[in-house]
Image (cartoon, rainbow, N blue to C red; front, side, top):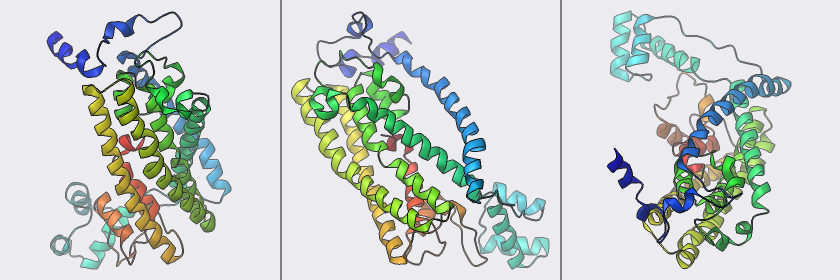
Length: 359
């Protein structure tokens, strides 16, 4: 194990030339550098945030939802049936013609009745508008709060105005003002934290946090049936998303991580990994932007942004997607047969890489 640990934490991979881990272990008085053990603080913090979310949704968001006349829906439960329930839970939630015919004969039911049972059973598991409103209100509050918190400190930081300061004195840089903010993410943040790229990490967080609250605000307006406000907020989200992910991120952040850091500290192995991950993220930005742009165009053609993909209550003639990818395809379809919410579907697709999109 000692040999494995020594290989993994090889200084020549993680740190610039002429820098060792020992150099970071004994900083000057009043100065502290990141340590891997600090990342374990994220676990109790996450537990505390989870507990607060339950309290917030149950007492604060739920009260707001009721004030907007969004009452918890009374779910119409499917007729109890052991055979169909077993198929639903262990085989498929959307049976094809072969399964429907077999179940029809086995139960002596009409195929239409079997289809209706599966439709009711699927809808039974869907969250109500009240529930979704509470979830979105929590995310809106959290995203907006963490963004304001980050901007409050970044505004006073020299590297916010001149990204070359991300690399001056690296890796001997104080990190305390960004400590809590860095615990908000997992993957790339953990990587940047280990080798103390905290300054540029804070800039990446700032860029990615800017649009999240607008998306949740648009969903809140949709659930509250303020369609015009929903459309306006979605347009604002789209504009901010495009500007931050396709303009500011490559020009402000990637330019600094590639060229300014190369000139000031020079490349080293973990530097290459870090930049490759950031480039992969930029590719994801382009994909998400394409999806959002397509949804925005279709929404404008229809005259409004329609329902959330998770809340579609099917008619007897409608088909339900088995996977998030199918749900996104339905959201992007010309006819919009499922009446899905385009911008929410894009967020769902984006959420498949949520750890990265937190960046």
